[in-house]
Amino acid sequence: MPAKVAKRRILVIDDDKSVVDLVSTFLREAGYEVIVALDPVQGFMAAQRQLPDLLFLDVAMPAGGGIPLLKKLAASSKLRRVPVIVISALTEPSLEADVMAAGARLFLKKPLERQVIVSAVGQVLAPPAPPAK
Image 1 (tube, rainbow, N blue to C red):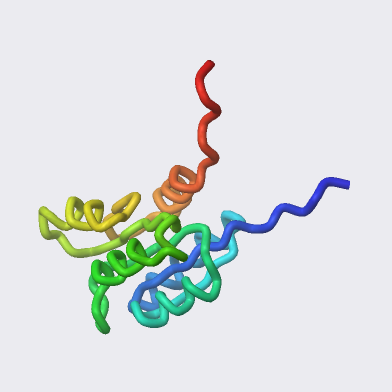
Image 2: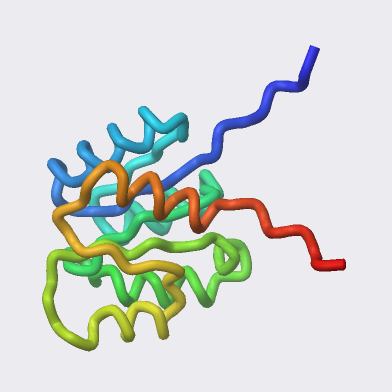
């Protein structure tokens, strides 16, 4: 009997409940375990408690916003290796470069579609390629 493989755990941090519900539904349907936080403070605490395999993080939120949280995650010895996909509806031209410089692995623009989300997660959580011989 094969060993049961644990579901990959993804933490979604966004203050917009409709976005959280949408992203969570797409991820659960794709077979992931989903944890939700509605602000950066809850998100950081949940990340520390749950140690997710991946984080979806909105940029524009109250209580500090996503970029300060991204920097806090990158500075945490416990959480710095957790990959982060930043999501945002903001249109500042430098935003993608700013979040990537702060430690994000990917940047996705809202509105989010199922295929884009599932593909992004697969890209970030894909197992590393075997070394070339």
